[in-house]
Image (cartoon, rainbow, N blue to C red; front, side, top):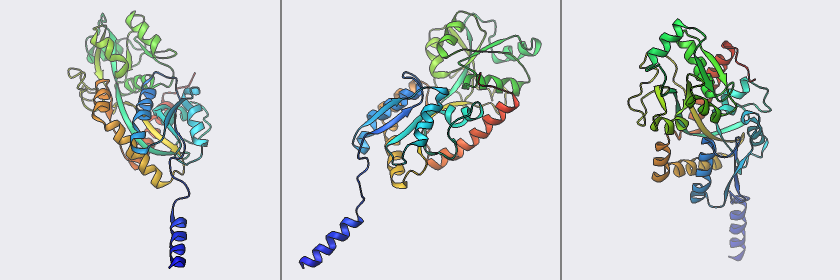
Length: 317
């Protein structure tokens, strides 16, 4: 009997995993400075994921090179589930077409989920003569290359949205790139620039204060935060739905069971009623898709922005 028990114990030991995961802190690498939308999602997850996984989850901001430094760090990390990338769409589908990046965005990262998305809003100063999207299109057709559109930088979501808008409406404006969203807001409020396709999260405080006007939104449906603002689609601008999104990925080769547990913890954390209601108030739409859906979406977005960047001859500087 003792011999039999010893054999059974040995078999159980051999069948057991070599280690319990997670066996050290999980690091969420955010490839941007603290304070932005991506950082908000990461810090929310760092407090909620341990409820499902145990252990500790920390946030590590690795900013630089439009987010590609942090993305490359994750791509090179061991695929053991202890290092994750929490990023906006830039490093996933835009930066690879603008600069030489030290990773393959479609091959070196293991998609887990797109957490949230948020549309852009075409905004103008409150005192602007433009009262509607039709006004803007009519003005640009009559005055090509005259109306100024501010963005947070070349190749940013707000810049690419403006380029897509001009392409789809057969109009042209002047792109005015800034180093970040802060200076854009300052000059919009000061009437130094005419318009911007600003992310709804950034625009809402000034829209509520009556200092900016929203003329159109880039989402597929009207936002509950701006129910009176039409979408580009319903205003006659086709194929111009644009979202800025935040997603989570791991180094390629993540074990299937670890990926499953990570996905479940992320979905549970962001689905918490208190968390999701706060995110919705800020203008985010919950996505929380599967790894397979994220992979298909990334591939489609990668091609979409590549075509626009090439056709519009967009450069990073």
